[in-house]
Image (cartoon, rainbow, N blue to C red; front, side):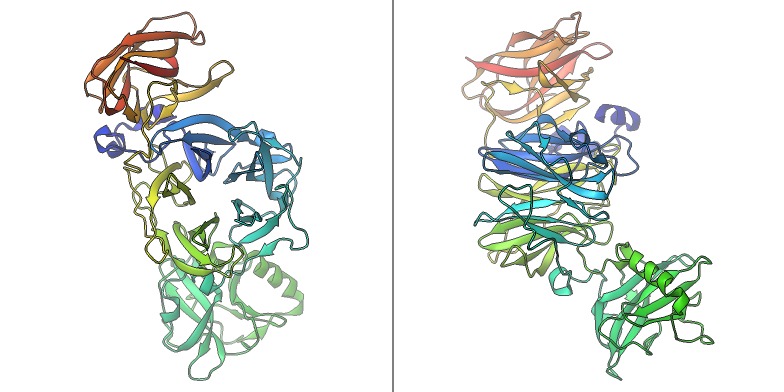
Length: 589
């Protein structure tokens, strides 16, 4: 993937390709990855990620991949951990999931589009963190259609496990001990998305109307007018002058504002009493917009083209009985729309606990998404909105984001995704990681997404034990593949391609380099220290062979490799693919 795109666009993103900048983000460059879900098991951090197919123009995803690290700077490709094929009932959409260990098994919760039933959540189980995973239910664990995506599982200190999910609504269940079913007495709980818990997404919402004593931003609708390409926000409010519930309207350039009050007074002040008026704009077959509100009694006005006034000759009227079903259906259809997403919560929940406090992280809207969080003294809320974790990523960002927070080796790490690789974007994303820190009161300190990523390894890599060739900090040009004999290996190697491995501790020095190779055209591996043009520690010649699947061991002497270095394995040769590369190892002097 990476090589084909790189050739096509040249050096479009030289900052990412410059080894002198010690680029670490995105952490995977061989394919596009998204929706990271880190998991710590024993001495290893495993990363479960979705896979955006090359040149996607939608969320085209067919499988999930697994990566592993013990040092936070070098990532070993463990291959495809799970695919749609594992679920006989699945049709498409291998979207964001999460895997957790429990009782010696590993449970991977994933959302897929079912052949019958729309978006659903399944669970696959394995005896190993890298699989193979099996669908043990043969059916979805939870089904609900629209928005049943992004499952995230959390096991509390008392052993109770919770599964959260949802877009644009937020749900959870209490999982049973078997981790493949949930407490039916509690059932599926819909979390209230309140202003206090998740913050109104409309910017400066409570300061928009000078005449309003208060607003109820949970009862509002932000609508785009195709005539002038502006957004109009209709919201329930209380008028200072009359102390009556009314409907106000304001205009802005974006769906989340900020909005301007151009009337200086309420738009609607009739028939607006009641517990819920839920102002909603719907459009008929003639593209005529209607503002409707109410609950047991539905009212309407025919909006004019300016969207801030209505047909006075008709005035405020009850919805006719013969049109009530149509109006009601249209109103219900807006429930999942972008315009009716009232708080900042968007999707992708991630639950985390620290010092007795529960943190709920989530992509926050509108689109493009930023990352935000709320906290609670309980894993089921009520939640209190806290702050932004990461602002919308500008250059090199994607219009979505997705958090995964985990502790490893005494530090906390935030995983997310961007669109920064060549050819990347909203549907071709790439996983990144940066260290996350808390202040003295437990608040998350805002993170600026970085290119450098994790600059210091949590441990050195030992070159005197076998290292898989697909263990990579940064690479250019190569891809990975899977074979029965070799497992995952590096392939598609051409002249000038390279693999960078960071923080390699040679100690007092190495004398020999050896590697598992299956040659094609042949070539050489130059072993350079600290940069592409760094000192040449050795050059391992690879002679041509008849098969690219006939593995053999090659070796060469090395010099100058002592102490801690980054190692660049630079591939040299003639035209065409040079060889396949399975593993490498140094021996001591």
